Image 1 (spheres, rainbow, N blue to C red):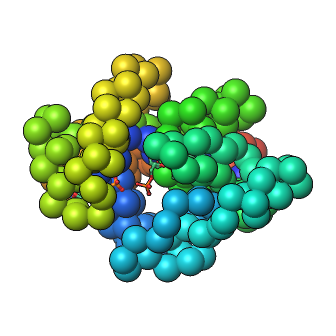
Image 2 (image 1 turned 45 degrees about the vertical axis):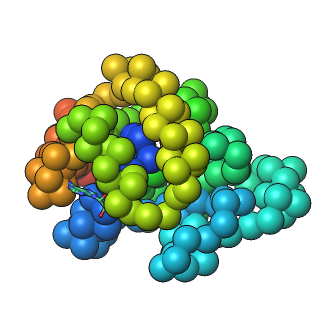
Length: 199
Ligand code: ADP
Ligand code: 5GP
């Protein structure tokens, strides 16, 4: 069995990462979405253990001390981190893993695991990003401005990613993500291993 691959999805807050990933996971049931830990307050509709593991700061620090995280970072006043164990278990079962993480975390993961595939998701325009953040209605005007500022800084690093997807429509963005997943499994080394394993 071929080991699964890890795919990082980064992009500005409000660009539609959760929306697009939800649609992708509906189509590709075999994918494993890594549920992050965070110290940020839960939004309406978010479930503990499904959208995030919601932790207080002391517990988050305990997880750091116990080396539970593949990566972690501070983002707009809160901590976010990827629990390592579940990612490794899923990959060992041959499942591809999706991490929805910001740029600092992405750099930590690629530093440790250079084979990780990185994908940046961008909005069709800054005006549209602000509209989506406002329309989502989960953040104060002040938080939205902080997230927009952060988005412009993160955008400067987008050229370092392996792929760049524009979320104009969810349908287009999901189609491109599926194409990337497929292409990444058409690399000679993996395909040759399959043929050799069949003999
Ligand atoms: P993120 O996870 O990147 O912070 P969300 O998935 O929460 O973003 O999406 C932010 C808002 O934008 C939501 O209200 C969502 O319904 C909307 N949205 C997502 N993708 C699109 C799209 N392609 N076109 C229009 N609105 C979108
Ligand atoms: P939000 O608060 O909107 O859910 O997420 C804010 C930012 O944190 C997003 O850019 C998201 O990708 C990022 N994020 C979510 N989970 C993690 C994580 O485990 N690690 C890191 N580094 N970033 C994360």
